Length: 276
Image 1: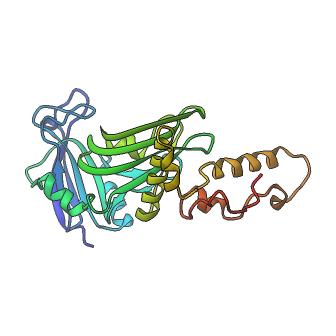
Image 2: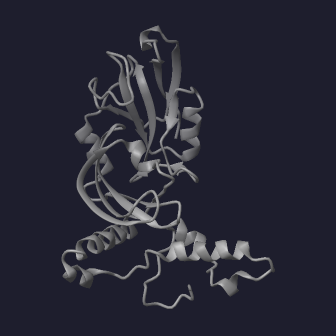
Image 3: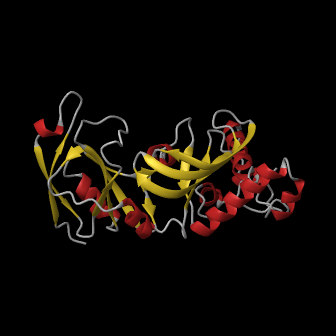
């Protein structure tokens, strides 16, 4: 895809309005559309008359990095903290432009943007592992209004700090995109395949509900949500051993990295996987 959508953009900085900034010539992919939460979408701070903007495109990762390489004020939107990748919603990637002005901006209505993203029919699921390799919570993105205004539903089973069982259901939450895809509290985020995401979301929802309504246990698939933790605990024990024992003696499966990265499904509890 060609970078042939040219924009001349000025960015604001601390104590300096975008009107006083240098003009940057930025070339975007030809399919790029721009949207914003408007002048009242303050975010982390901006100047009067300026906008926080998201550029949305189906360009390749390589082309995205070419765009952001043109100016340090542009940021590709990426998911994960320790192992990142371009964040995409049904094929669309995003570039963040903060506190900026441009005569070339033609903003697409946010309702139209969400029609293109089709989150109503194909929601995006992100699951989080805490520092102890326990699945902490899962978030479903329902609508993106701007970088600082995203509608979500969230199911939490364990605390993000430590490892307490702390179930919470947030059916309607509003937060920043960065809080979803680059989590705080030593968690890491993983973008899930849609069908697997729905399975895990429903599983965690039913677990939280079954504390009050035991009949929800009947709806469980039986995913072993502690599986990754048990595997990495065994790996930690292996690293502490003084002799050269092989991994198989510690019952650590060879595909644990694929499972940890949620490229393969968690096993079902009643299946025998040799984890002790």
